[in-house]
Image (cartoon, rainbow, N blue to C red; front, side, top):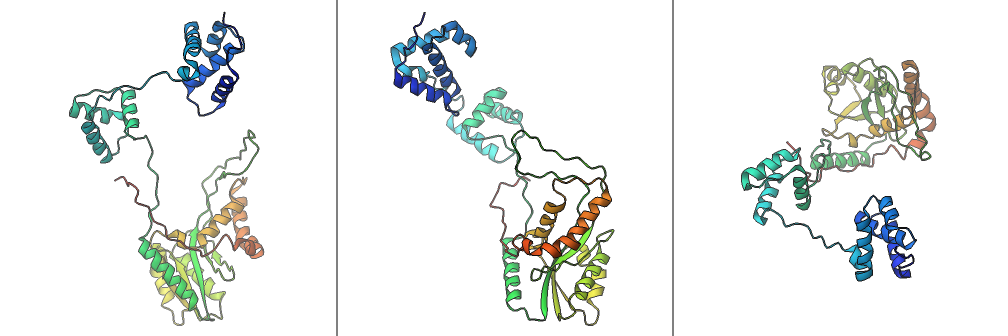
Length: 353
């Protein structure tokens, strides 16, 4: 029978810290647990049962503690086996792996076997890859963006446009958005364990909005077409002109969508005394269009974590945001919808092809 209270006060504090430390090695923590339980007066059989071990293991740990102290128990002396592959073979394997993207260990094990005559099991191959600093990861999806030089050129053009803008000129950003009649859950702070939920909607309808934004006065003209196309683009441009009768030139900045450059738009621009001057954004640069930020604000206010029983209720909520909420609360949106542009570039990721 092992007598209790055999641990010194300092050793007991060390073992308690080891047990409570969340990142401690599991095997060392079990040894500390066993010695603490023995020190509390538990029998070897009881400790073995609690820790799912056998009696002899517990006794051996106790004997090792008596002879070598806690440092001896904490160090099991295992150093790992020597690699079956030579250094030059491991280097060749790393170069081979860097040139491709292997979805499983099957191809890797086949390569090792064919090139070096060494056979690895699935688990053994995983350990080898971990030692060579490889990990199993999914590629990150990156958005296709324009050349940073083109982005910088547009930002410089826009800043110069604002600096030289005459009193009888104004600037609008335009784009289309298509809110879908679907419940959109979004993150928020809730009490832990409360499991928030929203009902799902049935149907795939959506609302089409072709709109524009003036950052100076937060004027947001828009149309609600059945289909966003060249006709809706012309309707939007006409509405912008109608809302700015005193402006000699109206600069409208939008993307390179086909309907923004089609025959309907060209015919509208060819009119005598047309006051619209179109500016095309660089391709793949939605971050250079502030109206995209307005769409995000709209979703936060109307679609996120909200359930609409019918599609009509959903459409009415979208239109109410543009017709009532923006004119009333636009001052509160100004710090969220800005032209504080930045250049986005992919910092040399390993792009798979």
